[in-house]
Image (cartoon, rainbow, N blue to C red; front, side, top):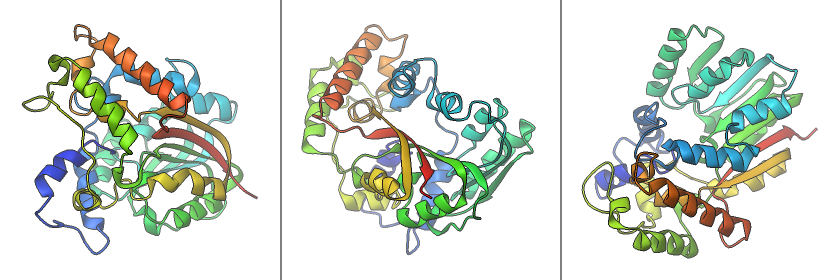
Length: 324
């Protein structure tokens, strides 16, 4: 989910206590994910990756081709001639978009998927049934407490869900043991600052760009007013909104390397675009006068800063296999 929904919930919940959270926040997490599942779409006006042009830019950064997304790139580079795989798993499946998309390629004879939110699982099951996908099996489970069978999966996916896991060591151990000797672990993840504690330099760049943008590009696409600056939330605010959000995100790559052999690590930025475009993304759509040109310039600046080492990449695609 990253920023999508979190800032809106912060405004509503800061100062109002923990809401429906349990001791470890599991109730609140399930509530958030149940609400958010299935709400993202290409052509949306709020989130950076809802812009088709942003998708093309990120595709190029990962696969080298604007028309080849990270999942098709993975199928072509790592699973050529192996489809359908016998059994796959998705950790944190949301409304099931990934499983339905992969099914169009005849991806797996059997595909397990789980999510912490019963509401998301209900949406995923309904959509899979409507698409006639009986080979996909959905269930409710918490990734922090997961116990997986040994040596059963050809592929395990973690797509924008691993950064919600607090017990990363446990989860990675379970994934590694569940994979077959030639099995693969694919992550497309937020690996930026834990609890969204953005660096001073990151906020300097984002807020400097906001000051430079004409007012028409800063107008909120989901409410009233202009976006004047992007703040750093406090840890307490993050926990009040969603105690799982980016709970140990900055540790993901280091811990993954400790449990797996990393075959590919493809950073793709988001360090500027993610924050800058939140709630104003629609102003940069293909139909916005001047918007696409500004978007390209901002994307080029972000990538130059990431490539030079001035800023880290907040997102990455990773392909790994278990250490044997």
